[in-house]
Amino acid sequence: MIKLATIGTNWITEKFIDAALQTKQYQLTAIYSRDIDKANELAKKYQVNTVFDKLTELAQYANVDVVYIASPNSLHFEQAKLMLENNKDVICEKPLTSNLMETQTLINIAKQHKKLIFEALKTVYLPNYQLIRDYLPKLGKIRKALLNYCQYSSRYESYLNGNNPNTFNPTFSNGSIMDIGVYPLNFGLGLWGYPNKINASAIKLESGVDAHGSVLLNYGDFDVIIWHSKVSNSYLPSEIQGENGSLIIENLATCERIIYQPRIGEKKEITLTQHNNDMYYEAEEFAKLYQQRNVDHNGLAYSILSSTILTEIRKQTSVVFPADQH
Image 1 (cartoon, one colour):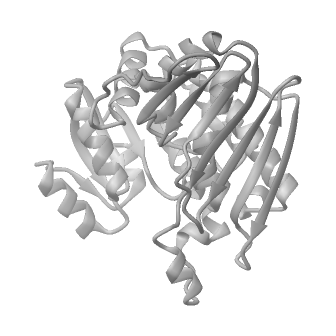
Image 2 (image 1 turned 120 degrees about the vertical axis):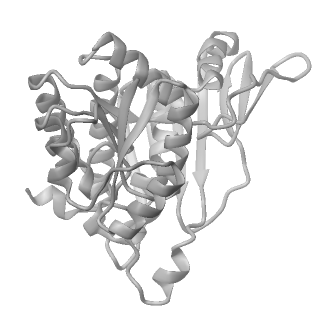
C-alpha cells in the first residue's frame, strides 16, 4: 500500500482521495491544512488519525510515502521542494509550478533525491484521450483543431464586488490560462508536441491576471486554436478536423463524449465507458510509476513542455506573477 498524505482540504483533494482509495493501492495516513479545524474535519470523514498544520512536521512524518498537493498554484513549488528534500514522492496538481524555471528546478531536485514528481494532468491518462490519439490517423491530414474550455468562475462575482479572491489574484499565480487554459493546452500538446509558433492574446483584469484569452499554436500545415475563459461559459464542443473526417469532443477536460464524423458517411459515437471519478486513471498511473520506481518517467518531459508554453503565453500577454521575480 502507498501511504498517502494530502495538502489542501478543498473538493479536488477529496476527489483525488476517493480516486486513490478506489484503486485499492493507497492508504490515507495524514492530512495537512493551515487551518487545523479543516484538517480535523477531513480526517474525521476518512477516519484518519494524523493531522498537521505545520508543513515541516508533515515532511518529517515517517508514515507517508507520497504527498498530494492541491494548494494554490504559487505554493506548489516550495511545498513540493520541501517534501522531495525530505524523501517524499510528490503528486502535484496542475500547473506543476508558476513558471518554467521553477518546474526545471523541481524536477532536478526530484532526480537528485531519486524521488517521483508527478503532475496530475488527469485528461492525458483518460481512456477516451487515448482513443482520440488512436483515431487521429483516420482523420487523414490534420488541418484545424479548436480546443475550447470556458467556464464562468464562481469567484468572479466576489471579484466584481471589490474582493480579491485567490482565483483572480496574481500573488497565487492564477488567472484563466493557468486555471482553465491548461486543460485545452495540455490536451493539444499531448497529441502534437511543441508547436512551430505560438501566438497568444488575453484580456486582463485590473488585478493583473487574464480574464480570458486565445492561443494559436501553429504546427506548420495545421493550426490549433485554444479558447479559455473564467468570465464566460461556452457550450460548444471541441473539434479536431482532418481532410478525411473530424472528431467532436464534448467536455474536453474529461473527454466525456467523442463523435467521429467521416467526411463521407454517417457520424458515430465512439465514446468508451470511463470510471465515474475522472481522477482514477492519474492515481492508477502514479501507482504504477511508484511500484516501478520510475523517477525519470515520460511525464517529466511533458511537464517541461507544458510549463515552457505557459510561460511563453504569459510573456506574450504580459501576465506577471511575484514568482517570476525570484
